[in-house]
Image 1 (cartoon, rainbow, N blue to C red):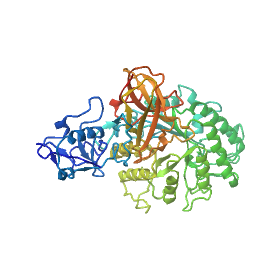
Image 2 (cartoon, helix red, strand yellow):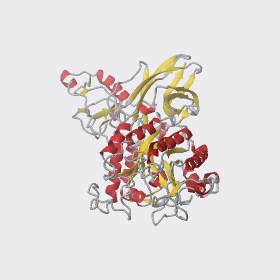
Image 3 (cartoon, rainbow, N blue to C red):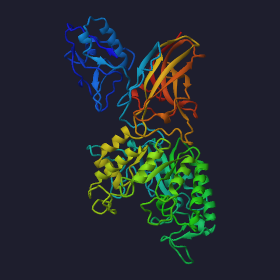
Length: 617
């Protein structure tokens, strides 16, 4: 411990009990040290001593109290300067003991205490996290749905009486664009919509409705996601007719009965029919040629059989084919989508033939099937978040078991629009009062936080409208606290170094979201790594130093991770540089690949976070 000493005759400085002097928002951004407050009667001590370092984002000596823990905090390096000033003062033991300062470090918001991490001769730089604005990254943030019948004008055209996505009213009385709060545009559509006739792949026609709609999303910086639905029950002809008429795939009717001669209704293929499988393999191979693109596509649902493509209530020619069909389809997707994350629904009746889609006891095959898919690189999703009737202890246990081994994403349940009735007056397990969709939105959020999901969805129509009109606070809260939000909270680097020398730097990385960066997925392939860079006076990169040990998938909420990196300055000529830090894409020439939750004033246009200057002598 260090003890602050004070000369009691110094006018204007008062030792007081810990109290709040500065809190600008709900999270306090002043790392390092726990102290009693010191005031000159007019403001913070920094105004009296004036010891702010001139070229850093290290703030003047100010004190505040963490809104959650009640712990007082003061800036790290300025604190040391303050101690140096006070050490020259005459003090008595009584006064010395009146204010005790345990040494410890903390980033923005609640974090565990850690080591100082300072290397002799290095300068410590605190990087303040940006907690409110959208930080777009792969498999992170809000998902907005696209209607299969929409075109590129859906942004401004009201759909079925609901507000246009570019004019969405909020509970704060403002009007916003949905795309400004979204990371991903998700199209759940039919195979027949993508290939209406054999070989007619609509996404390859730039003038097609789908091509224009998807382009309107990517033009706004949104990533894409897909589910391709095959079963047509309750929806329509989801499988192209040629699969049956040309190749003879056997089919069942809209009521689930075998198609017989003279039947003219919707047809769905048996998933264990070899002719269907050959046609689907051909189609999906073509689809993957254009959408197996990590830079464009966020995820693809990789087992979309059954009702609504949700992997339940399947119909086979032979029920014994359940597991072989599951392995066939998950093998197919994982072989074709090597660069794009895949997801499987952790439904308790995954791939099962129970036509009610529900039973209290999960199928004995389900957990093994989930494990098989995750072993092939899949993440997991569930499509009934917020529904206590269908999301119970078993589902919670699956999410907990796979947390941080693979990402979890959610879809809210179908509770609140006019055609459904999942209120507590009918379903006792549901805690929601009738006509209180705001309660449902809260239930979805609470379940998402418990499951540590990386992505939440707005869905469409009534769901998205009520998220914005009734619970815009939850929209913003998930952006701030959900998914992953990465920041190099504390860095130490030297300000001078000899030409050709090796220097030691340290970095402390924090994740302010409850999810994690799924860099460990095969589709990510550990492509993102922490790195340092030297910049010239124009922010141009002179040299990049990648540290393979700085691994983003390791960073979890309230568990900051520290690294020590040796940097060889060979080949760096004498001169003036700026230290910078970032998360680079090692598959793309080590350019910044993940956006960090760092204040914009510190960031270069390329995404590096500036630190302090370096003189190479």
